[in-house]
Image 1 (cartoon, rainbow, N blue to C red):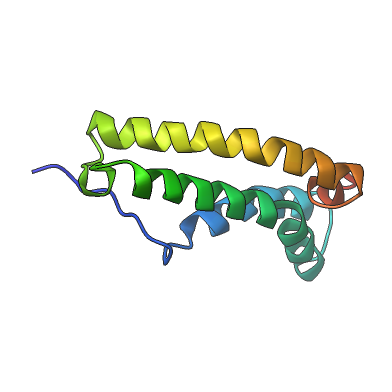
Image 2: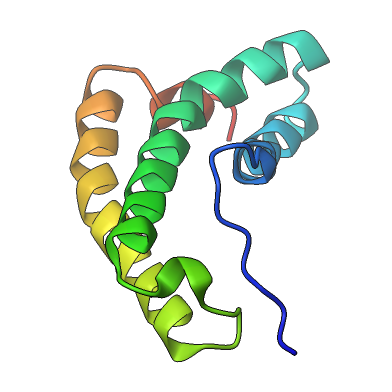
Length: 111
């Protein structure tokens, strides 16, 4: 019996995992924890949230993907398709935000 994929909006792992990259980077740059958390949230929240919404939507709309196992090609192709579409959506959103000094631009000051 294969391992079933977990799908659901109650999983906060992507948010925590995604923010941790920026959080650790700006902490290494010398920011205190409170400021580092604010920078990580400002830098990554929109991108991660859009990616998760699109990815979960693609999986939910792909017939059979919600019941697929992690090793099933159907699950993997739906997941990959969701990431590709999310990338195409988040790239211009991130560019727009960076151009206005928001999003990832907030963290760039500390790299």
